[in-house]
Image (tube, rainbow, N blue to C red):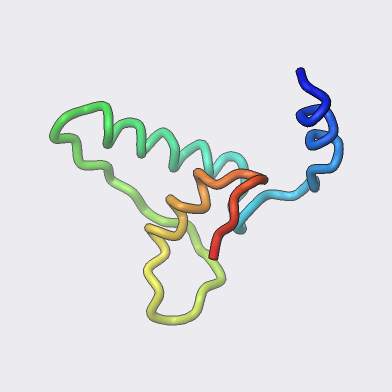
Length: 75
């Protein structure tokens, strides 16, 4: 482990990114892996409730939020 890694681990906030808890992120990542790894597989996916304005599709936003990390910026 480098000095940079140990410092960044200590200063990371203790909250989840982009409204998603760890269980939801895990569910989305597993669905993405099946979609990529199994040719022709259509992934059934029901998105969770998210506090977004009317008219926004939440599926793509949830997928994006599931794969971002502490060093990424979601705009």
